[in-house]
Length: 166
Image 1 (spheres, rainbow, N blue to C red):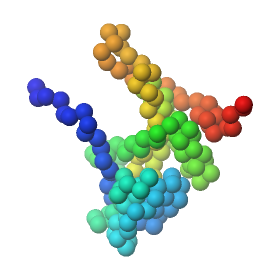
Image 2: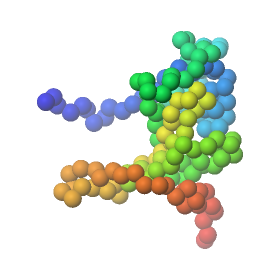
Image 3: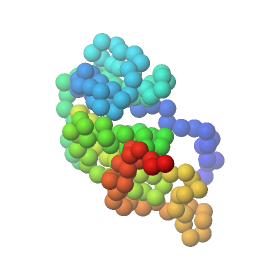
Image 4: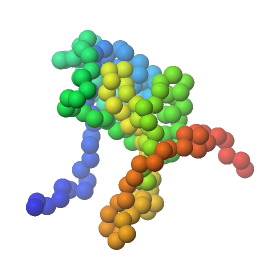
């Protein structure tokens, strides 16, 4: 058994093969609200939240005009986009609703709350926020995380956007 990876390691960005850059930009920037950082014509675009060089790369280098992979093949199950707060996730749900984009699912995993959907190229996305670690469910011995999947109450999530009564 090898030593665990450095705990400071994280996933820096995801780079997606898409069929049409403009269509993808309409979704990732126009609906989800990412900001375009750089564009290479109709071949690539780099998007971020907060001015980072890129969290999402989009390219048509080998996929321009292509179709999603058929079911039953290997590849990316979904890319997960973590939101900093529950209210930010509620805002993502609002944006999706206003754009008429349907969810494929919504789950409470104990450690997080998540929305599932596909982008215009059929790429699976999970939009989620993590609960603070001290609120994560634990195994009986306390050594592990006791994740689960339960339906997410979308009305309760949307209540995060309601003005708070003083």
